[in-house]
Image (cartoon, rainbow, N blue to C red):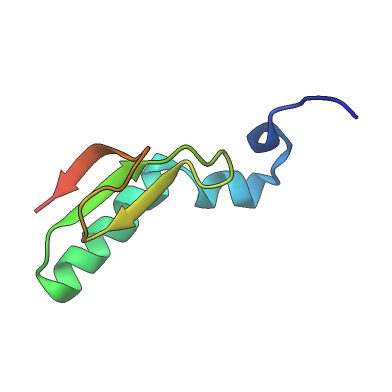
Length: 68
């Protein structure tokens, strides 16, 4: 078994869905719909490197952008 990067073996669609650009688009859409500021977080999970949320970051998550 090789030690390859799990993110490198993702399908092109999964790579696009897990990108910062997609997270930013989701954050914009959610902020417009709810009026609540959205955080784009960097996670330690290679399969979901970015996450959009309205909650403060948790352990091993870092704020990359804030859509207010």
